[in-house]
Image (tube, rainbow, N blue to C red; front, side, top):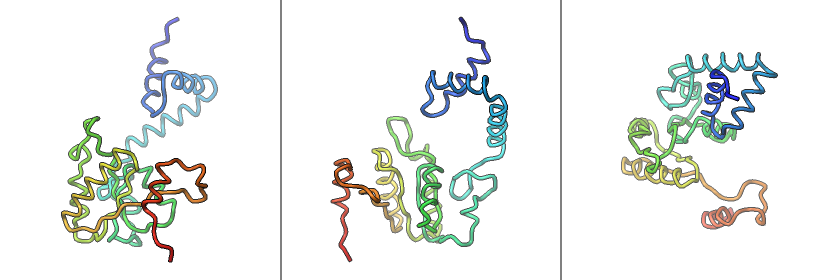
Length: 199
């Protein structure tokens, strides 16, 4: 039995989502068509509105509906601190900790030479201009602790230090409430290496 063309187009459209393969796309499509057509229409309207109205903040590169996002427009943020993250989701997670009051720069990716993503593709020149605006005193690198995230942090650290900026990297180690016997060896080793004096 052949799949109707529009149904196949829906399967293909759903597969653009991360982690959604052919079977998951079919399940989602059938669910929306069989049980939640109103939800499907709402999803379509929300996607269309987001595509039409959401853009990148001119200062930090995150998503916003205005020229500047709420954080960049806030007079209460510490403009001398700039935290570099890979994605808007990482920025949101940092904000949820309620421990950082500076500003952000969202890379929208990370260096990955195997995927053809270098400094030019990430527009790192924009970050360097932002960091050397005369206001920023410290750049905090909060890229992920993957091979690509580490390479990105190393590249940025070298580039920013060469311009006279103070650069720091978020720490890694044991999770709060974690027990040693359940922590992987790499995390435990890193926590040991990055130990600090008890005061």
